[in-house]
Length: 290
Length: 290
Image 1 (cartoon, rainbow over the protein chains, first blue to last red):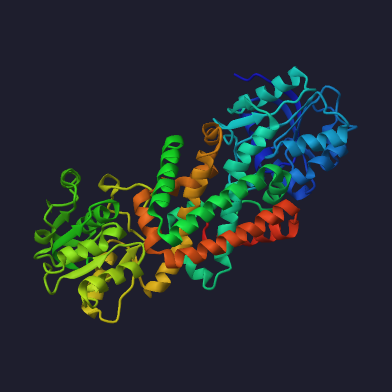
Image 2: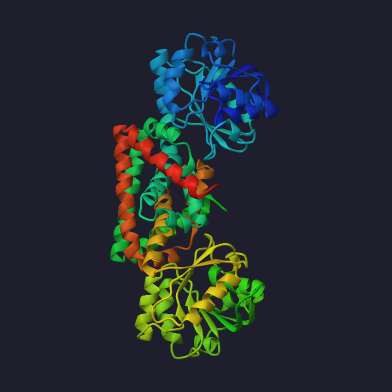
């Protein structure tokens, strides 16, 4: 049962996340018209051919005009620019939301552009995605049973918050409300840090002598471990910088513990090594059963 | 077409690796009798019930007597002890091989026990496995299309080397010969280091305040990334210490590069971040297409 009726949905940035949201709302939601916006006309044309959007605009001001729901699905580094472009063109009762992987930076951008946070702007983040990117990788089921974190602010109109929650619920997601700073800390630990580690590992190995042979002997575990290093470098650059306040402390914590482990390996400190591995295995077995 | 006929195969340590080898040789090879050995009688009984072995022995000296092929599939920390136990009981023409994840330490153990490396002892390492362990997780196809690295030594009898190669080929594996030091360096980079990182990450997160909530918001990428942290802690303790000469330098290299990345994030050095992520993505896309 759908809970939100949308007349004109405007998706700014029709990539994996924006494209999958369009597909999901078309398949499971109640939306009359989906307009895509972006900088690359060929890309929008592709989205149109794939049936992800009904039409597209390269003039963003026209695209947002008359839309009742506007989704910011652009890279984090483009959020502020796009907000400034649409500021004077969105309908007063339009609901504005985003899908950014860091929330504080998007809220700060909105504050800078709008002066005070608009009552209809509801920051959100679907905890979903793959290492693929682009509209070709989009699919309607991406958000099924996935968490979406919504981080409402003090100025929010409750009706706008409810609409954003309904939008994601219609896509099959499980919506949770959270403070944006807490969101950024959790994502730094569970998503941003692992991406840093995977990128760093692959780069270290790629720069070693005989790296081709090294990769040649990598087995299944390595493939799984490094899958996220195939993610879009520009997007992850943006996330690192947008969330640096939460990311740097957790990177430090990790580095300190890795140093302890390296010392324990050097010195043959069996107790420390076994204790750490045992704690980690227990924790992982508890939260994932695969 | 099988290439090696075995009359009595003795597998010391009937876990995931030893058990899967028994299953593979029974299914794809030509073996008359498979005897399992281990310390835990209930565990051997289970292997017998599962049809992995034909019989078992808890007296290792009886088990190896009369065997034409003997597989050391015990933890790395037990290799030297087991070699000492069987030394005076193996047939002079029996082929002895192992499945250890580090090769130099096994070779050193053999040197210590036997005085000089036996001509029939052929060190080997199948690059296969899962985060599961135990005979219950064993399956005949584990080695299909997987690499097995054989590290022959100067004293080796070529017939013994050929037999070990044939044994793994019969299991569907692709056998490669390599110097043991080089083996240890490659495995430190592609397997041992990633395990250290996964264990460390999960442990860091598990020790944070609100760790349950943290894991609750971990998505698919995190699950894949940390899968190897569900591996057996004792086994990985042994591997770390057995291969510490190769592992410590690559851990240092990784830590240094992670420090560079952390500094770049702190300072907003976009060029360094994008360059590193782009190199890593290119390298991974090149060696894995998934």
